[in-house]
Length: 224
Image (cartoon, rainbow, N blue to C red; front, top):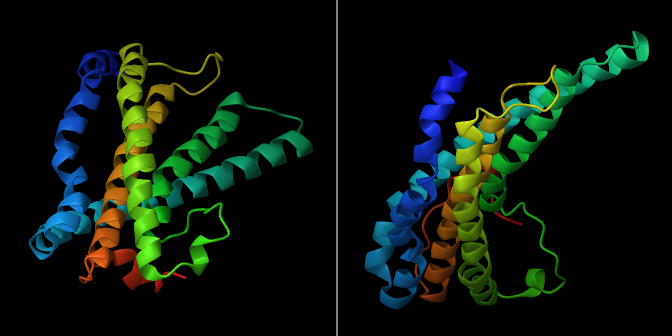
């Protein structure tokens, strides 16, 4: 049944990247519209930001559940290997897949909480306006091109995986590799959307307007 479903979805998934790019295009321009026209587009951006952060929040919850799976798998692997001398490929792959999917799905919420790693020594010393310039430039020149490229190439890659219902190369492995690979375009879309939300706030700061509200800041306290 899984094989038939995968083959049926394989072809449509090949065009997913094009559909997603078309749907995302108007939203990706929101930060620049706020920078150019100001307040009218802040009001348009707020519902979009709310939706983006709601989805990011649910993706984070799924990632938290996968970390529980990862912990259980690793615990069982250690006990079986060092106490009973047993090893099961499915358990090892379960830990690997849970780690990979959790990492990808948690990334948008990490960006929303400003919890990602910044490799610099200057940003923390900048004023709010200078930080906004850096964030907006990073969105336009770094995040958007990189994530659109990932989405563009991931579409056919994931479609091919679904088409053959790709599974582990090990005979006793898990038959869900094609589902795990689907988190790659999901990651690209969600992180790009969350980056758009952060860029909208940066553009509002540069226009000296109240930025769109963030559910992550209200839930987890102000950003450091």
